[in-house]
Structure formats: C-alpha cells, structure tokens
Length: 412
Image 1 (cartoon, helix red, strand yellow):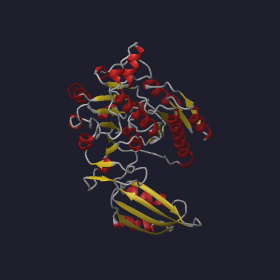
Image 2 (cartoon, rainbow, N blue to C red; image 1 turned 60 degrees about the horizontal axis):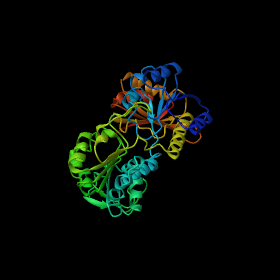
Image 3 (spheres, rainbow, N blue to C red; image 1 turned 180 degrees about the vertical axis):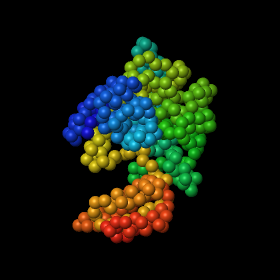
Image 4 (cartoon, one colour; image 1 turned 90 degrees about the vertical axis):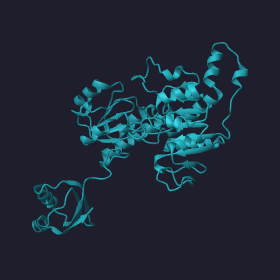
C-alpha cells in the first residue's frame, strides 16, 4: 500500500506507517496543483494531510481509497467529493483536546491579567504597575462553553479546578426534556460532574463572564455565534475562540468589542495565510482589548505525537483489515427498503446467482453481509435492496440453485 503524506508529520508516525509495511512518500510542501499532480503521478492508495486542503479537482484522476486528516475535523477536505468517488475520509478526534484546552486557558488568563499588554509595555521600557494591577480574577466566575466534545470537556475540567462555575451548551443535549440540569459523569461523551447544561447558546451567554467556543464547523454552526448570542454577554465579558473562525460572525464580534467593551482572544481568523509564515492583518486585532495567537491550538509536541500515532493506526488497520477507524463519510441510513435473507451452503457461485437475478430485475444492492457458520458448511447472507423483489423473482432465485436452503424477505 502506497501512502502519500502531504503535510508536516511527526517522524514517529512515518516510522509507524513504514513498519506497517507501507511505501511512504513524504512531501510536506505539496499543495494546490502540485498536490493534484503528485496524486495523479504517484497513484497513492492513502493520502495523509493536516491543514492542506483537498479539493474535488484533486480527486478527479486518482487511485485514492482513503484520506486521513491528521487532526480533528475534516473541514479542509471536500468530503462530498470523496464520497462520490468511494473514498473513505477519516480523522483523529480527541488527540489534540488537551493542547487546545491548555491554550484556551492561557488565553483566558491572558485576557484577565492583560499579559500581552504587560509584556508589550515592558519591552517598550514602560513600567505601569498601577494600571496592570487591575484584574478581576477567575475564581467564582462563570465560564460558558459552546460545544461540548472532547475539547470542551477538557476546558471544563480545568475551569472547575480554578474554582469556576461552568455552563455548557451542546447540540447533543438539545433534545433533553429538562430545561437545565446537572448531568453526572457517564463517560467521555457526557459532562464532567458539576457542569451545568443549558439548552440554547443564548442561555449560556446570559450567564457567562467568559464565553469560550469549541464548535466543529458544519452547515449548522457556520456563523452560529451571532449578534443574538454576543448581545447577551455582560458588558466587559471575555470571549475566546480556539475552534473555527467561521462559526463566529466577526462583524457582530467587532461591534461587541467597540460598543460593549467585550475583551477577545482568538486563535483562529477569517483570512489566515495559506502558508505557515507570511504577512497577516485582521481588523479585529486593531481593536482595543483584542489579542490573538497564530492558530496554534493543537501545536504541542504531545498533541502532534498523539495525532501521528493515531493517523498511523488508521492506516495500519485499513491495510490489515480493510476497515477504517474514525471514518466520517459512511451513510448512516441507505435507501434500502427490504432485506433479502438467504440461507445457503457455503459453495462458489451461490451469491453470484442471487446477484445476477437481482440485477436483471434492476434491484440495487445497498449493503450485503455473508456470515459463515462453524465448519464452513453453511452461511447466511443478508442483502439490503433499494426495492421490493417480486414474489416470482424470489421463487426463481430459490429454485435456480440447489445450494440455496431457503430465503425470505424482511421490510426495513
């Protein structure tokens, strides 16, 4: 199996993929047309990327069967285009959660203690202890969290350790019948003890002294943090975004800074440079009380090693089993309406006989599973179809092969 790594990637991950028996091409500077050309020329089976964008034109002439995003989320990959070509898309969720949570708290503390301004004045030879002694402190304050996946939960744990009250909203909790509840810890997908769950983003903002955003970018979350949420923050509150720039209405955020004294810390911006270095400007950073970092939330040695290890595991499992861990683009429900169950002797040609007759009747097989009984004498096939086979067809299939023991139809 040939693997093209078209982004910066830890050597430990490269070594692990090679150890799995793969032929690795490491070209970390590939992007845009160069990446498209490399995919067409080298014909890899697997593509591994981090921040490099994978677009539909790149997939037009390729032998790819798997794309691995070495990070959380898949917003840099045209998942729909991959799905149309039968290419798996996978990612490494949760592996950078602690790194992003650590940066989130660094930014919260930087806002409260005005660390960026402190350091800037000191470098300029200015001593102003009277001004910079003014800070609210975090103990007893309310941290509001929008988005409660693995990163949001790590942020919540750290906030509780600081003695803060934590209020969260997640799309996963919207259907709860309770208006507000403290949900006990029931595993990594649930809140930690002491976290208060509310059921609208606006309700979080109304209670928050600090609002921190940890939302994946989807069609539902694009510009979700809009004026209706930001206007509910108390004057002088803090706002932190270490998720995706596109989930926030930056015009509304600028108005909140100018008109209501909201202090802001951002690790993500609307128009970031395509390369790791370059010129950069953003109108938000010109406003008082706004600080930023260079989209470095996941950029710790610990996080990158963990992500490389997970990406290598995905490639190894795929090579050895044909299955893809963390796959994001398989249908949760197919157009299948009926299941044909065929109990048969485990002999060559039985399923080919069944499929030939289904094809002749213009019935499409959506999914199929063939389970072999102990001793490999008999098996049972479950075949999901996009329509109902006529009774005559079932009789023809049953009578047309002596190794079919029986069959029946189930409506899905």
